[in-house]
Image 1 (tube, helix red, strand yellow):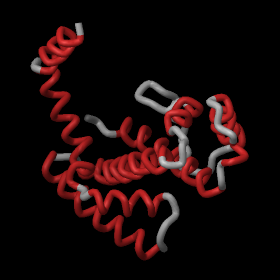
Image 2 (cartoon, one colour):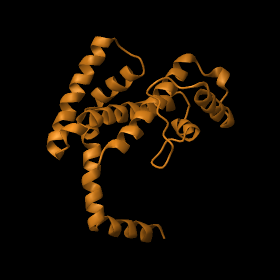
Image 3 (cartoon, one colour):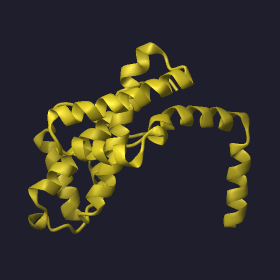
Image 4 (cartoon, helix red, strand yellow):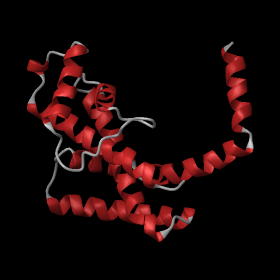
Length: 179
């Protein structure tokens, strides 16, 4: 059954819409694929509060160079350059924070569900600060999943908040990209 399902998926991917999807995926994935693991980790840590403004600016300049290369490679319009950079920065930060939060025995999926993040989610704009209802939704979701929130330290909550902010930017910027 699984082999049949995989064969069906492979066949579907071989069609023209699948090829177009792959090209679109390449645009979305370019910066992430072209960024070293070390740079990704540095960006993720910076977005979680590590370093100072000068070190973050240096990281963003490195990422901008990679992003500009992907813009040129894939013919992304100049008007989308800033959105594409923000999407890429949020994606790298989000992916790093998922792993970092998991090391603290917390699941980022709980935040996704609590705030309705995802391809068909509400994806609230958290570019400002989270409101009390959003914070309480996350806290309650962790309680409901069995997390003893009294044992979660402030540094962990800050990473959860950074994850929520990065995820908000990720989904909202992705929706603004025309591919």
